Length: 222
Image (cartoon, helix red, strand yellow):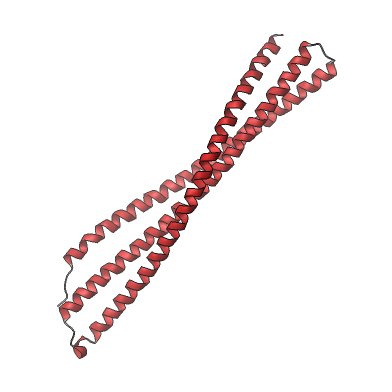
C-alpha cells in the first residue's frame, strides 16, 4: 500500500504539471506566432534595404568611373583640376560608404533569416511542450486507473495490464521530454549563431561610423 500511496501522489503531481504545461504552451504559441509574423515582416524590409544598397553601390561605381573619365579629358574640355579633385574624392567616399552599407545590409539579411529560424523552431518547441503535457496527462489517468483497480482488488490480469499501460506511457514521457531538451539545445545553438551575426554587424556599423568624418578632410589633388 505504501507504493500505492506514493503513486497516488505522483499521479496528482503529474495532473497538475500537465495542466500548467498546457496553459503555458498555449500562451507561448500565441507569442511565437507573433514573433514569426514580425520576423517575416522584418525580413521583407531587410530585402528592400539590401536591394537599395546594391543599386547605390552600382551607381557610385559608375559615378567614379565617369569622373575618372572627365579627369582623363580635362585639358581638352577645360575642366577645373580642383573641382575634379573634389568630385573624385567625394565619389570615392560614396563608393566606400555604399560598399559598407551593402555589407551591413547583407548582415541584416543573415540576422533576419536566423530570427525566422529561431521563431519557427520556437513553434516546434511549443508543439513539443504540448506533446509532453498530453502524454503526462494520459499517464496520470493510467496511473489513476491502476490505483483504482488495485484498491478495488480487481482481477490480477486487469491490474497487470493497467500497470503495463502506465509504465509504457512513463517511457513515452521520458522520450518526449528528451525531444524537448534536444529542441531547446538546438535553439540555443541558433541563438549563438545569431549573437555572432549581431557582433559582426556591430563591428561593421562601427567601421562605417569611422568613415563618415573623412568627407570633412578631403584631400584635393593639384
